[in-house]
Amino acid sequence: MRVLIVKLSSMGDLIQALPALTDASRALPEAQFDWVVDEAFAEIPGWHPAVANTIISAHRRWRKQPLHYWRNAEVPHFLKRLRATRYDRVIDSQTNIKSAVVTALARGEKYGPDKHSVRERGAHLAYHHRFPVNTRQLAIWRWREMYSRVLDYPMPDTAIDFGLADRQWPEPDFAVPPEPYLICVTNASWSNKRWPDSHWASLLALAGDCGYRVLLPWGSAAEQQQALDLAAPFAHCEVLPRLPLTDLASLMRGSAGAVCNDTGLAHIAACLDTPVVAVYGPTDPNLIGASGPYATHLVAGGYPCVPCYKRQCATADYSGPEAQCLKTVTAQQVWASLCAQQGLASAGSG
View 1 (cartoon, rainbow, N blue to C red):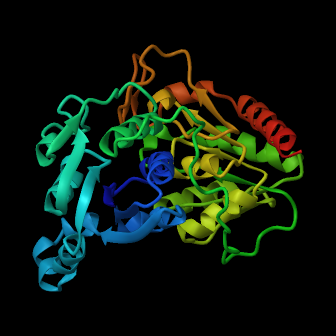
View 2 (view 1 turned 180 degrees about the vertical axis):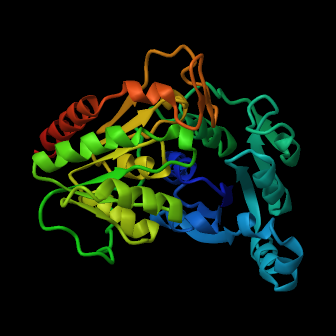
């Protein structure tokens, strides 16, 4: 059986699809799985041993100058690769219009959620076969349920397995600190999901007092500057160079723990069994939370609007880009939670 997974982005969404792929590869060991993914996250599918081929899209670039990328053959080359194989199953695992178009263009029988379960209205029209899926559950379980229906095997009741336990991670292209280090992911895709800089500064001070180095990754020039500003007062803090995702995963795997906003790197840390604390305010970790045996979600309190899923905060006393609810989560709470997860991880490895 040949199966094509269509899941283009984003980082956390890709990670949350891996357990479903683990289930499917165990239930159907003879099956071959290919994956269509955006170029920004192209490394992730290849981490899973069941993925044979990765087909790389660049929709974020192409939509800015579609005619240019058609003429320079990028888009035709992608379509040629996408349509080179007739698949027994093409599974839309993103279920928005963009992924539905890719699903429709692939060759083979198309499968996806029904009209009540897709992320964007109308995406279901791309599928030959549609299934109802409970959308009020963690995304990992949604995809485990979906894949079991599409590929016709019993829904497993086993623990979540990302399929990465036996992977050998390469040494990152970065001088890893000799002392224990933490990774603090201070950026987020929405400014409204960022824990306040004053809280991050307090946490960085706590980490230094306890003898840790702290590494700060970033993904854009603005995020790099934010990380540099936070690290500047602390000799034990270092802003990372731009690194491939595989190198960042390797650093996460070797770290003593991670503290993150609601970001894709939180999912990577969690799936690698790294002790991680992720802070949530505008979003709901019950639906999209970073998952792993040593992951903790700290959810903002004191505001009835949590979770609002809004990119701009709007309360009775404030309107702007900084989520007021996130101020209720203190550095001391985060540090205590991280220490608790480190204790669990140490006990689990003993």
